[in-house]
Length: 538
Length: 95
Image 1 (cartoon, each protein chain N blue to C red):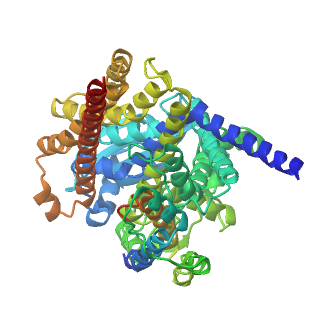
Image 2: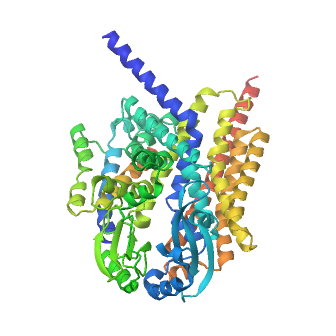
Image 3: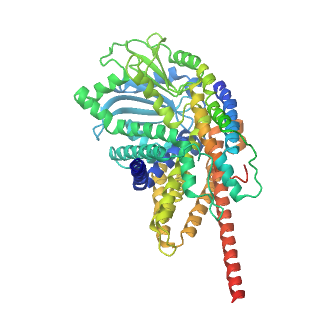
């Protein structure tokens, strides 16, 4: 009996060590990935908000067929292998005529000419180069792209950033599973949080209760996140080496499910508008993007890509024979025939980012992200609380917690500030968005090292967050001139949503500051009363 | 849009069930009795009833599966997770 008890105790101890170390070593980076992941859920909305834009469904409302024919006439033949088309966040259609080449990093990339076309069908600009370079310099996505890149690779050069975020996903998986296994009273403690003498919640209980509720989704999100990182970092390159002798193009053709050798014999293509309208009718939605292959040849085809709708979770791809405009098939994401692998793969992105039911599902996924952030924060605070009791020392771990937990949101908000200010001054928004983040990080680090009182440091950073959350909606308004009345008229839900979230966060920051000040005031009063009593007693 | 609206009643039902489970939670009541003289947690349910309510949280999955509303299943599960956490965070003086 005693042996049994001691075995259980030692197993519980081992699980606790595994849980603690996986959290403590990578906790701060994990928080950065989870926080920016929560922001990345609304990356599309941030893109629209930062440009005060609303989608006009230009792929349906403009004459795509006429525009493509006009652009084909002025584009070199070599770039007509494939044409991708989508609506950007500045009410323009982006047409990218391209072929496929290895970029200077040795990765297979799209290379060609990108045209920006306005709603009237006029060419605004054109640019030649690799797809990844053109996208990286596109100012309209500067803010959302920067925030998403923190989540996916922490701005560390490829493939190391992806590998690190993959490891962080695994650390989250280990922490979630070990947390689940070591908690003996998982269901009995689900609703109970003990309070301390000062009325605040007990950190351990807050950590376990939030962790218990969010375990299923923590496991799901950690697994899908790790899959993304590792598949891109070395899963696909390894597959290219093992199965295709290093031929990345052949691998892409097999994965995408295309014939490698297509006929280039000229043949007039059918009207693209008819195919787009038909796909929209079938899906009761608007395509997210189009991919037109070998336009004007015997092998011409059109692929319309749709976000999940009608209660489905995975993406849909509709393929048309562009020589006669006939609908061919609902194409699987991978390969040419439907498979379990393709079905699972098409679910991973929507499940990870919550993009399967518009803003409604995103709102729930943001809440799940906040819960995961809360578990990470309370876990690290718990460690700091248990190991740094001294009030006089600098308490480096607690200091780092404040620096990271309150500092990262402030840096992210500063990057948005940099985006708007540089936009108003006609500067390079891509560069200034990044630079503003770095400047804010340096200032916050300097403050962390110079202010000894951690509570004062936290309140200062919290005030900074509150002020920026309050300023940004006004800055957006001054840079675009689009207010809420116009937003309601044009049904600009994404823009209003981000404005409201920022104002809510601002109110929450100031409320936290108010309650902290009240708590401090009460503590001083109690201390003074105790001193008075002691003096009277003497 | 219809599949989203169809999920909402199930989320509301789930919220009510979670609230009942929280208000009848014996451990929560025990802690509340220690800190508050006046106890607002007056829902007393037997252990079996609580188990039944707990299991009934799974019931909405049946109509959602029958309607092929897979997005609704994910939203329902996600919403229950966050609502459950938020209800647990509410102080016992409030709930």
